[in-house]
Length: 114
Image (cartoon, rainbow, N blue to C red; front, side):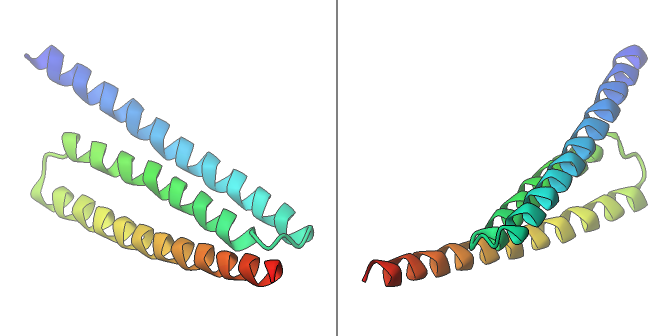
């Protein structure tokens, strides 16, 4: 049983690192794309950047959820729960911003068609 527990912990640790890494890569790529869109004066700069940040947070949130598998101490559970709540709240705010920015773009497109 100890061997299975050690294997589970090792797999989860690697998965956490992978998801954290993917979140960082997504954020870097979204930032580079955002700068390129800003330079080209694209009207979708904010929307694309917000979508990239939301995707980054999804990966980071996934890593925190995995982290709950290996925590052993009650204080660690509270810390992980706090991080999950903060990231979820930020994610909700970003999705709200995306929704508003998409509505704004639709309004601009409708005005251009007139």
